[in-house]
Image 1 (cartoon, rainbow, N blue to C red):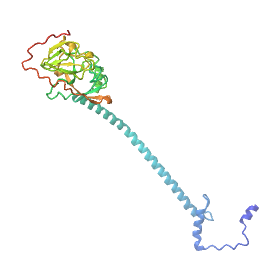
Image 2 (tube, one colour; image 1 turned 30 degrees about the horizontal axis):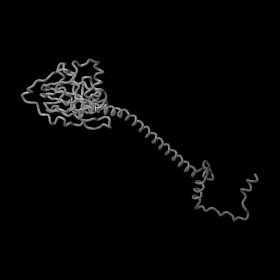
Image 3 (cartoon, helix red, strand yellow; image 1 turned 45 degrees about the vertical axis):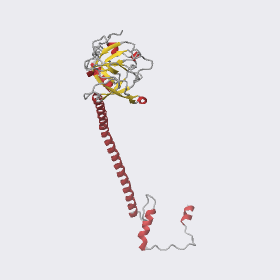
Image 4 (tube, rainbow, N blue to C red; image 1 turned 90 degrees about the vertical axis):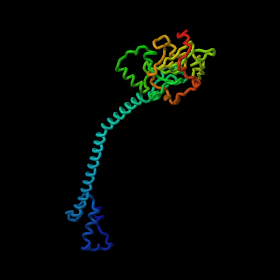
Length: 318
């Protein structure tokens, strides 16, 4: 009680308060209202004209904040709806794009260039196990035919394989698709070898120096596996027109035309069974290169137009 009295009591020595100016009364009220604590009336009589103005501003501020919050929530919901709506089409687009890529690769493999997985060492060192080569299917498409020295992929059905092995058609289709993309081993009827003789050629092994001769010309074969002889099996054959005599570069490990001399067709591969020419090694990246052409047969003459005067000497393994 004493403390309150002392606080409100005026110092006698201080000058009297000046009388309020009626003209400035509105401004004083305005100042008092702006400085009044929240919840207290802004006018002496508590009617609160100034307080009503301040409260209205606060309500409007709160209302504006709520409106902005609702707008933001609505925008986020709209964004979420748009994201959800776009999620389905995005997956569909991805699936359609993937399917289109697979179809494109299959068409490319069927008509232009087919990947081919090397499953054995019969073509070492030119091609190694696990290499994936690209077979150029356009190489012989427009009237050209395989030449001596070309590395070719062919279907051996009827020459190297007398009957096509039977299998499940569904798994066979899946395997063929994977093989066409270079993801699986080739069919059992597909082979890769080097052309040594073409139609009309006489191929003989071996001469006094242990080398193959084609049309009487000795052939130096730099692509053979070091230490291998051109052939351990002697033969003397004339290649019928429209067929090829093929051999592997790793002669001691290759099952090729020599092994089918006594079979129907005599080990000869029909030209129309050639899938294409092996032009590139695409995988692994460390061996990414072209399949090198050879000049080993550049000096071999064309076969005589009337055929060879002396017939083949022997046709067995000997």
